[in-house]
Length: 149
Image 1: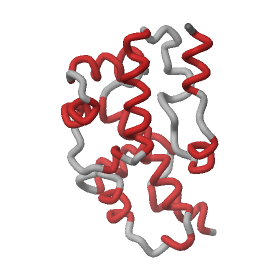
Image 2 (image 1 turned 180 degrees about the vertical axis):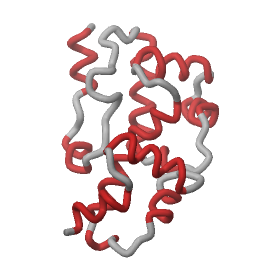
Image 3 (image 1 turned 90 degrees about the horizontal axis):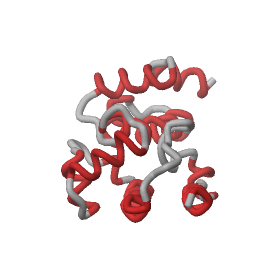
């Protein structure tokens, strides 16, 4: 069972190229995810690969509905089996790497940080700045300056 799961969860080349995450942060995945969640996990990964996480005001209920599963089941998968503290941390796991890609792009150097935050689904700049700084240790502006110079 573990070999089957680990073979299914290896990141594909497209995800590595884009620098976006494939699942939970390194070391947080519970290796004993029950078989009943494997289909749900695969559907969730496919939906996130389509940048579903960029929807503004995305809730766990909306994601559960899009996946066709009860909210409590999705909450159990995200919190217990993937090891995220809460739904916001789960979303930030996708949104912050996407922001880093945008901020490193010299063609988008004039794009305001607020526009990037809104593009990635944040409702305002405050939560984006806090999540970004917590993840990287830098504000989005500091990160951009570091990689644009």
